[in-house]
Every structure is written in structure tokens, then in C-alpha cells.
Length: 499
Image (tube, rainbow, N blue to C red; front, side, top):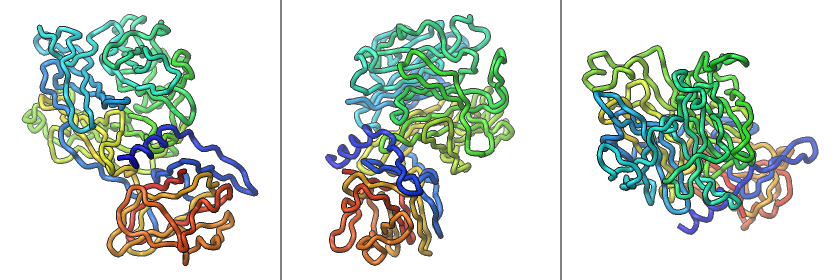
């Protein structure tokens, strides 16, 4: 537990490492910095290796819609981890009369991210009882439609603004004063009020009927909102949202003044309908943003009309199908899409083949020494809708891998500014990983060459890398080097250079 907390504390305080120029090339400074193989940012060249998408595994139901005010349209979950609890916020759909529903914001909490309870908060009376877990009810701003919460852990934040949130809608039927995204603050994450500088809805020309994501970006030292827009939006349009559903980004230094949203690019990948985005800094490497959008296929159905009806999937969700994908960003206005394949498939449960199922919540957190969890809405639009917990190995979104034939990968130049090198890896009984250190020109460094590298065999999250005769990477602090990974029947998830 102490080791886990040590690395978590380091990661939570990381800022994006600066670049420095030495000689003819630019190097990344590695001081308490972890790199994941979720893109090709750090690898300069490789042979007989490939990138492999991680496979999330189900850990069962985290939250079921077993309360009358949660309804079959439970969705848009955000999960935060503060200093004491995991907290989940999600939309319920309380039935008022004869199938007519109104959105409420529900709350659940957990000490471990695994076992969740719905406390009786007694804030509002719902369906004749105050014994409920509702923290916000219908309001003119429609913020319960897509309420999204951020825990702002920075030291200089007033306690009454420790928890921040956004929510709102832009339907044409609403009065103009109630259109857009509105800001909220709280001292305890349960009792909320409008932010006192929030005088009008933000982004009110955009179609905000989605889970728009509020976050803090350590590498940019700014707040960001990742919001839904249209790929064919044009400046001056009265109502934007044309073309593919896609993502834009707005930033703010003070939570008050926000930049005009700018559309994100996808590195040349084909456009797809991305209904949500769940973009957040990864807690073990905050300079890397992990996004898990729900994408929609508008042109296909997997179930027949009879099967949709038999599974009690609401008529509004019978026309499309959806799944979840993995994207990453290193800041700015670009996402990387290394994988076009599905990250979370609907699976064998027919309830998950409706139009808005398989929507990942915002938030990925460590839930054991070797494991992290995220959460996803299943069975949306059915009476049995629930939020499922999915697990991955720590750093296990993607790996640099090799089969039985030995492969190699060489990093871009980096400057070591910390003492030790750790790797997160797994091998077969006949596989291994070796780490060789090269100078900037690609020559082996004396004492750290292929003949000096120790074969690493096994399965470890943070394994210290040493060389023969007890040589350590700390001997090369301040020098520009490259790492050469030699792999056989092995997966490499990350490397970490730390004090």
C-alpha cells in the first residue's frame, strides 16, 4: 500500500515535462515522469513489435437502477476521487405521470470504488419521500440533464468551490436565458449552488444535450470543457451541430472567462459520430489525457424489432447501435486515434444493443494494487439499466508488444533527471524484456549495452530496472540518451523514471 501511494502521489503532482534541445535533436526531460504506449509519441523506431489494445473486463454491476426516481434513462455518470471517497454522479429519470419523466441528479459513494451505496440525503422530497439520493432536481437551466462534477484539489481553491460542476441544455424550446452550460460549486460535493460569476449560459449556440466534460489540465494549467459540437459547424450559424457529432475544447484559467470552443482534430482518422468523450488526465501520467467516447452507428441494427421489444428497449433507442472507443491527447486540440477498433463492445447481453448503451463514465481510478476501474452505462432505455464496473491492469489501456520473434523499439531522445527506471510489463515463461541504453547517436553506452542488460521475466507493475555489476540509470543523470527495449513474447505497458 505504501508503494502504491508513493507512486500515486508523484503522479498526481506531475506537470508536463519540458523539452530541451541538445545538439541536433530535442529531448524530453524525464523527472518523475511515466510514459504509456497509448500513442507513438515516445518511440522513434521499432522492429517486430506492435501496439496492442487493452481488453477491459467486467467486474459486475456497480449501480443498478433500483430506485423509482432513477428510471430507465439512467446515464451520464461522472466519478471523482476526493481525499476520502469515490463519488459518482449520474442522471436519473423520475416518472411524474403517465410515462412523463424529468431528470434528476443522483449520487452514490464508495470507500474503495468497488462497493457502492446510495445514501439517504434528505435534501429533496421525491415521490413523497425524503429518503433518496437525489442532490438536484428540475431547474430552469436543465442542469440535471447532464450534470458533470470535478474535484478541484489544488491548494489555493476556496473550500466552498472545492467541487465544481457544469450542466445545461440548449433546446430551442427553452427561454434564451436558460440555454447553455451553467456552472456550480460545492464545499462537500452534495449541496450545490450556482457559481456566483455564472450570469449566463456558456456555449449556448452549441447542442449541449450530451455529457460535456469539465476537467483541470495540469500540463496546461487551465480548466477545460470538452463539449459536443458538429463537424460541419460554421461561424455565424444560428444553431451549430451539423455533420458528425464531434468534440470541441474551451479553456479557462479562472473558471470565469472561457475561450471560444475550438474543434479537436483526430490525426487524420476517419470521422465517426462521437456522442460523449469522457476526456480526463490519466492519474498515473497526467500529461496524457485518456478519452473513452461512446460512438454511434446510425446505419445498423443488431436486433430485430421483435427482439428489441422483447428486451423492453425503449422505442427511442431502437434505431441505432453504439459502443466505446479509446482516444488520447497530449493537450492542445488534437486527439490520437491509434485504435479505430472498439474498446468496449456491447457484448452478448441484448439489452446493450440499443442506441445509447455502452457509454463510459468520466473518471478512471485505481481500485487495487494492480488494477484500475472505469464505469459504463449498460442497458440504456430498458427497465434493467445499470452501471457496470470495468477493470484494466494499471496503465493497461495499450501495450508495446512482441510475439515469439524478438522485437525491438527505440525511444526518442530523453534526458534523465531522476534516479531510477521502472517498467510495467508481463512476459510468458519463455519470453523476456531487456532494456539497453543508447547515446543520442544510437550507440550502446558502456556498461548499459545488450550484454549488460538483465533479462526481466514475469509480471510486475513497477519493476526496477538494473544492469549487471549494479549499474543504475542515475549514473546518466543530465545526459541525453535513448532507451532500447528488446522484447520476446512480452507486453510493455509503461516505463517510469522517478526519484
